[in-house]
Image 1 (cartoon, rainbow, N blue to C red):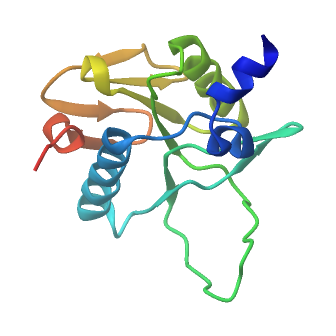
Image 2 (tube, helix red, strand yellow):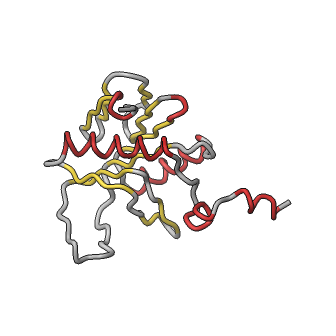
Length: 160
């Protein structure tokens, strides 16, 4: 039985300990990065897939927003001196919402000010922040008061 379960898990998932992204996941990730960079390029540094140490493990959010920081092309493993202000997770089809929420809680405990959870299947973006009520967006402007970032919902789930 265990052997059957291992066969169903891809090499990507085994190596990285997380579900394999699909086309929709990548598309939304690109939308987020482009949208955030276009609007906040001078104020924040927007990146993807940076590992953050959390206790004895690491977390690698899909999109991260840092206070503006310089890039050193000669530095191959830049140390994280501070957590991102915003981490964005795009829920994969095989992930439960509990798994994603647990990850969001761990990131908030680490000092991340806000976590966005994008659920492509339900076409929602939920903003989770300490000190602010959880808010789910299905249209309009995603407003994150914890970090002062706003982004059009249509930008996140744009198909063109």
